[in-house]
Amino acid sequence: MDFSLNDIQTEVIDSTRKFAEKEIAPIIDEDEANSHFRRELFPKMGDAGLIGATAPGDYGGSELGIMEYSLILEQLAYYSASYAASFSVTALPIKIIEQFGSEEQKQKYLPDLITGELIGAFCLTEPGSGSDAKSLKTKAEKSGDNYTINGVKQFITNGGQADVYIVMVRTDEKEISALIVEKNCAGMSVGKLEKKMGMRVSPTAEMLFENASVPAANTIGRPADGFRVAMTALDSGRISIASIANGISQAALDKAIAYAKEREQFGQRIIDFQGIEFMLAEMATELEASRWLTRRAAYLHDNDLPFSKEASMAKLKSTEACMRITTDAVQVLGGYGYMEEYVVERFMREAKMLELVEGTSQIQKLVISRNLKKD
Ligand SMILES: Cc1cc2nc3c(=O)[nH]c(=O)nc-3n(C[C@H](O)[C@H](O)[C@H](O)COP(=O)(O)OP(=O)(O)OC[C@H]3O[C@@H](n4cnc5c(N)ncnc54)[C@H](O)[C@@H]3O)c2cc1C
Image 1 (cartoon, helix red, strand yellow):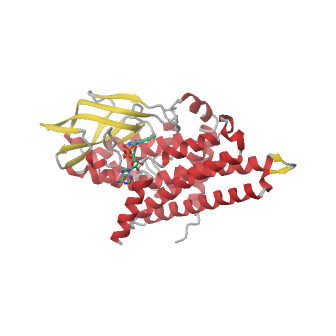
Image 2 (cartoon, rainbow, N blue to C red):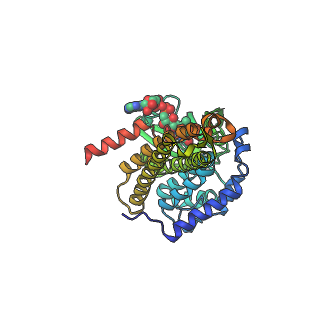
Image 3 (cartoon, helix red, strand yellow):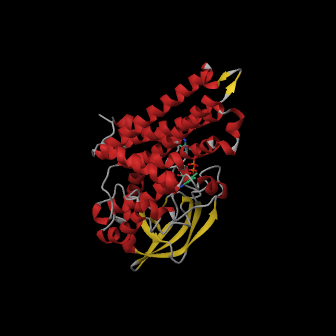
């Protein structure tokens, strides 16, 4: 397997970096301080061809692979993990509708999601069901041509800001279905807006469903396909989370190296102390290993090969490495690392979220070991 970057991939990195330098770098500190989500960034990301990178050309996408998408996310996360996370969640409905939706659903939703005019959300988690997603309780009862939804979805990224929600519901004792619910659906409302340790720009909200009525035609695939739809989306979503982790890790490593070259103690640069040298060497090695695992999973995905185990390995390794690398970056900066002004403390807070979402580290180990038993 050759993971050296081709011309298109190098161009993807350069153009995403230019976009982030222009649109995200100047505003991110202010947005993080105010937990302010800048919705107007999404049409700009759409314009730059970032949101629809992997989507079919017929709907306005660029038909690139997950490899290129992973490079985009890594670059965005280098500047803002919060915006990268919201971006990756809006891409989940695109992927789901593209893969499982009807032609009518594709024509209705994909073009505007790809341009960033519409924002997407993915609603699986509930107060009583997180890792054990299959035990979800939100109910959708069919009457005539409609479903009536009742229940609560918890910790929904882009909740309240999104226009298109993919909601996993129980349509029968044994049947989980995926329904498209639009923002203005009567009976769907935004509950608690969470205050979080990190990723403060990216909104996380509770979504409430009280007799929310949607046409049965909003079902994605067949009624009983919901769990498969959700799990398929999470498999590729894990490559996205790994890519975001690698972007944060690179940003933390760059900050640590730059600081260690400048800072002097005991009459010399701290970067020349072996204690610091070894820490930086380990950070760089951990990041490189994470990146190659992520690219391997993306390569398998793009070549239609089984990639579920590798996506979990990439997510597990990259997010745990990110936690270590960002913690070490704070250590390299000493007391300054603990101060908001030097930013690395934000990276450390952001890293923690990645070990939890789209399957915690423990759940990744379950997926990997299940695959090992199968192999
Ligand atoms: C910032 C943020 C954004 C999120 N965005 C979304 C979103 O957009 N959409 C969405 O649907 N969800 C979202 N989530 C929810 C997220 O996916 C869940 O938090 C996650 O799946 C874990 O579920 P839980 O929090 O209920 O923890 P639990 O499942 O209760 O787990 C608690 C602990 O038990 C461990 N555990 C659980 N089961 C096992 C097991 N079988 N073996 C070993 N250990 C186990 C877990 O690893 C964890 O350490 C978000 C969460 C956060 C924090």
